[in-house]
Image 1 (tube, rainbow, N blue to C red):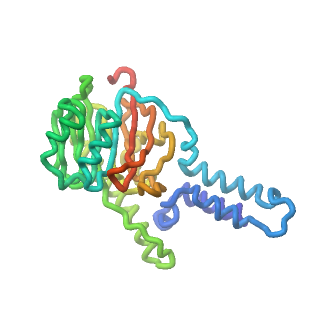
Image 2 (cartoon, rainbow, N blue to C red; image 1 turned 180 degrees about the vertical axis):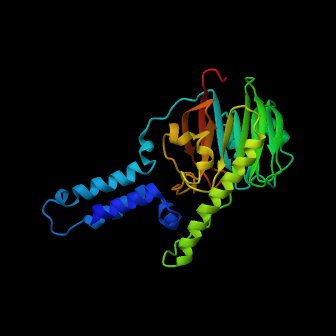
Image 3 (cartoon, rainbow, N blue to C red; image 1 turned 90 degrees about the horizontal axis):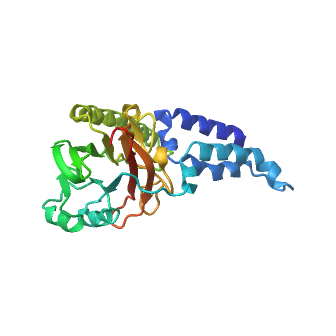
Length: 305
């Protein structure tokens, strides 16, 4: 029975229909322990005989359909460009101090809407060669010169810049609509809520991407921030043909970013266009936010830098 349930759970994670988002929003590896316990039989002389195949089946589901296996990979050195993304939770100055210690080329801030007059603080914390663009809810900091910007959207800020090394780059910091986590699974409305959240994020990301495409200058693109949804091929379909997720490509260490104390969900992500090759991506505990921050390192693909 346990092997059959593992096959069913695996199929749900592979197909991921909206109707079962209330289950598949959780990391696949969480189902391993209850799955193996289902196979447990009392008074079995050889426990291994009882749980061998169920354990194999659930490990395939837990590791093969999640990002947990990347936790064991060794960390990698920084590349040519370092991107840091952090949801500030309104603590912009604390988040800036934290990001500055990581020596980034670009910082993507979210929940920065109420902060103004930060230029002197930027100069003291990062240096006078950094430029800050404040949006309605998302902001961008670059080491270099801002060429153009679009800050009128409520869920993203776009910046075209020339980095300190002379390389042109387009940058998007985004924050999509927050989820409404629920655990009342006996209530049909809970299941509808999760399904509607996934569908609305699919539409929202597609709309953001359409606007970003109209703003792009032809330079390499960094696209990241607080997606407020776990990695999901259905939601990411709008951008997946043009961009790559840095953690899926080169992630190491614990992947989760939300919440800070129990980071089960990787809702903060950094994606990049093909001119940038991800060589490392990880999350790090934050003292400024209820999210963990993301550090993504890239190298210029030959001929693009």
